Length: 342
Image (cartoon, rainbow, N blue to C red; front, side, top):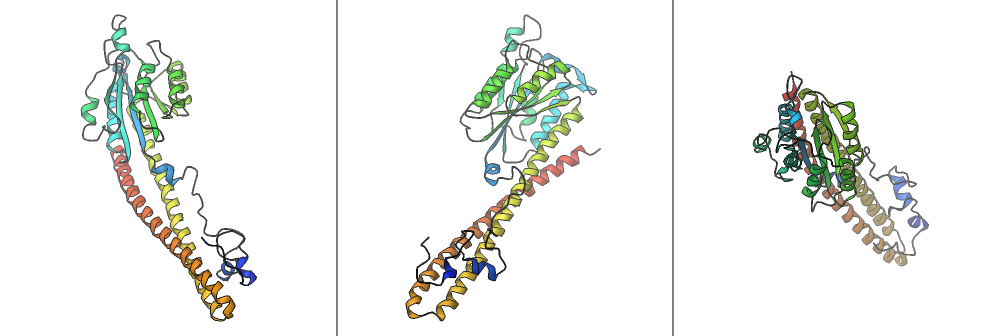
């Protein structure tokens, strides 16, 4: 943008907030020249449109060791977990890419079956391939039988995120016990968080003892993730429902930022229009020697006005797109809430 030409009255060179509009012009329409009245304000922590536009990848990891055959809340834990995960996938926002990994479903939970079971880690649905129409078949493809190779499962989970550096990468692990295959899941988790995919691991302890919960909590903490205890399908459902609600909340914050962007761009356009009108009035009474300077100032004002109009239109398009996505997500959450109704 060219500088303000020389030879004009002093008011044209006073711009306290550095927004390219002289202080006197801002004061004429009630703005404070000491601050940026068109600046976009954050709506809430984490309300970052760029961050929220980043791809979100979630790998669901389920414990299918022999202990998942036990009952919790009146049904087998594996059946409760399947039902809750099925519901979660069916109502997950469209832009969340999902995958599914299972462990402990090979061999058996006897000492003789331990070697096979501890190698029993399987990526049944790579990230991006777990979809509503196929999730039921995926979750029905195994039965709980063996030991609990959490460390091996997390290593396999990390490999599933290859090529996804710079994206939001998350593992949601549901387990009913601690590592029983001699691995160190906390160390593995720490390494995955420090890797290029910067993996976050959220852990749900399903009907676990306080001792087992302590290790599972350390896995989550090693990656900055969260830990939750659940005792039944209803509690697991409620936990997964909250995950969907968090996504909706983040989209509301994103919409707030986009609305602010539109408001800021509209404000800037108003300033530029007033600036151009003021320059035209000043030029009409200026001396012949000053008219060239005012002509240059008019050109500068026109460039600023075009830039502000383009930003207003772009912000409007971003808001329209974000609003449509938000409404779809709210609809999905509404259906989830209805399905939870007594």
